[in-house]
Amino acid sequence: MIIKMGNFWYFFWLILSAGAVVGLYYGLRNKSMKTKKIVLFSFLAFGLLLHFLKVFIPPYSVDQARWWRDSWFVNICGANILLFPFIFLLKGKRAKDYMFYIGVLSGLIALFYPQEPLAKSDQLGEMWDIIRFYYHHWMVMAIPLLMVLLKIHTLSYKRVLWAPTGLLILM
Image (cartoon, rainbow, N blue to C red; front, side, top):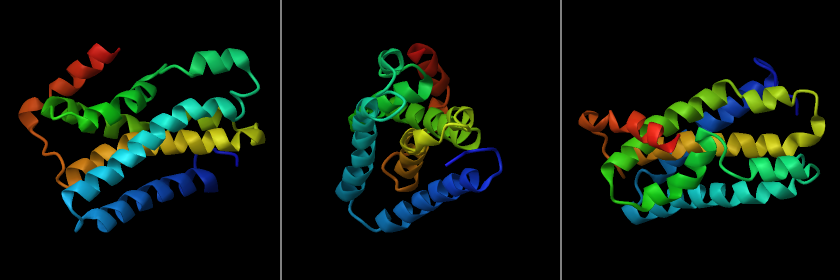
């Protein structure tokens, strides 16, 4: 699976990501609030677990220096993978606004311009890491979006400035 801008695999992941959001929305829209929360939290918890399990797949399993460096949350999306399950469980509206604005924006940027898979364009053996990359960035974008679409959280434009403030605190 070689990802290049505009090739089959590039559009495959974009269409799959959009289809998964639409499918989850229609699958969950008439369910109870408890069911919606359990399903969305399950995706977040799986993403957090997958972040730590990535050390068992190439290239992390064969490069100990990379394993130690990338097992931590070294970028905004990585930090959000750690924070989002906890923010989801909190009652704080500002934190959930951060989750929506920063999550949707950073996830979409990563899906539309996937730097990590583009850099691995000559390394066919890293298929599992590419799948992990797309799952994590889909999750960072989709779960906050679904949280708002399914009315688990209501955005307030009065709190919109808390998103960049939260991002600065995170950095």
